[in-house]
Image (cartoon, rainbow, N blue to C red):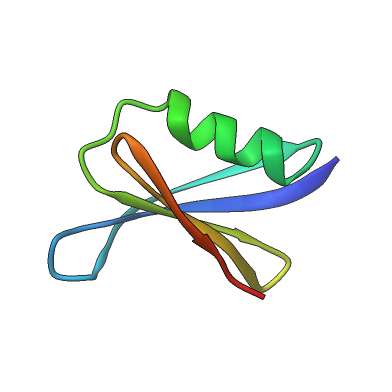
Length: 64
């Protein structure tokens, strides 16, 4: 299990909420973000690294 933070980003680029969770891997974190009812971008972070942005209804590229 790995520690993830899911940041909800508003239209101005500010953090409006954060959810912390322990998940098996990046795929599980993406699935969790998609499961949430959200109208904003969710940034997924793990151990200080940004994994991906999840927008309502779609997925943006990975970061390294």
